[in-house]
Image 1: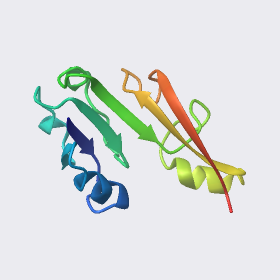
Image 2: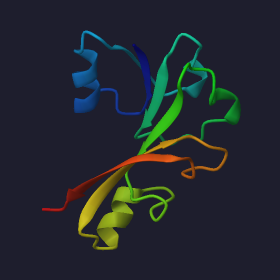
Image 3: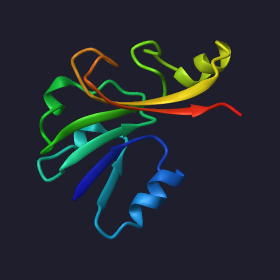
Length: 116
């Protein structure tokens, strides 16, 4: 499977783990312009750019965002910092498909992690 991760953290533990997987052909980029029809699925992870609509359907499955907040409550920039400032009891990571408006796509999954 050809997976692209749009990120600005090219040496994160997640990236290293996926690059060592024999089933996944992983590419990373900071530029959404690198999305092409040979890619099966795209994930944006720790990514601070708005992806233009014309890039949503180039890959075979689509573009998904790993957003570090409890959407829709945590929309916007710096969600982890907002979670800390709001003294919330847990971190939440939301998986959503990109849409015309940032952080408003269909939600597929939420992972909840209790703060220590």
